[in-house]
Image (cartoon, rainbow, N blue to C red):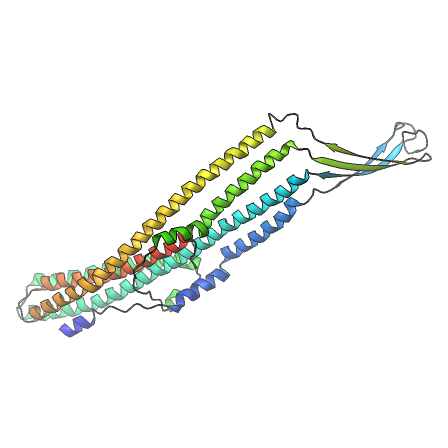
Length: 405
């Protein structure tokens, strides 16, 4: 019996699974939200060309007639009678056009990083939910192992009770332990359904057919290197950083609003039987209301630039704080895993082996056996928890550093 119990308490080795990377690659290529992001980028690229082009020229048609109530269709009564066909084109101050093009390009780059952040969030959620899925599946395996142990223990206790070697209370506690395992199983299966619902949205795959596994936690280092990588790669931070450049360019553009825009126009006037003539010219705006318009616009854009500089600092310190938090979470998970796997697991197994031996010869009671069982169960579940805690923390670090794939 002792050998049966011990054989059911072996911890499954955790290995790398190729299936995980296949899932991520498939979702990265086919997820509808990511496809929508790609279409939005195409739209922004088209908008860049649209925003930097000249406005459409304006064609006008008009009739000059001072004899509208007397022979309205006659064209040979007065010199002032004409039919006019004209065209005009608005031409912004040329540095404005160039700077406006630069602003749109900056908006495109900023939006790209905003969308890249959303893409990385989806990939992160897939990893996180797969890790949680693995966690629940592994715990259910452990629970099933212990259910078998509990059933054998109940049968063995009933046999001993029938010959008067154990009390009814001991048999009862063995059944209580089995019921507690059933309760844990029900909770885990309910949680598994929630995780599957999340993964159905993110991955749209049937994970029951996949053989997922995770490697053991490992020692990590290089916090400062992660922070430096975050500065240059985190898409949220890059988006805010580029928004500062956008704001600076908008300040320059606002200052150029003091410069006039021009409208070039020309028209052809038809007169019958008199000679036709043409008209052409140029018009431009005069910023005489600068204190109420241009000055205020420059002030607005300057304040927005200062706002974004402060937002960048806030975003940087927030992301840095989260990165440090998860870095130490990963280190703690690794240290905890090492203690449980190298110290507590061997110790609890030895204690359990000893107690089972003594229980079989009547030197220990069922309460000692159940206590030892619960200790080993706690260690096995904790090993699973710390494995998942490590991988979620590490993936969070990768996401914050902007290198998650």
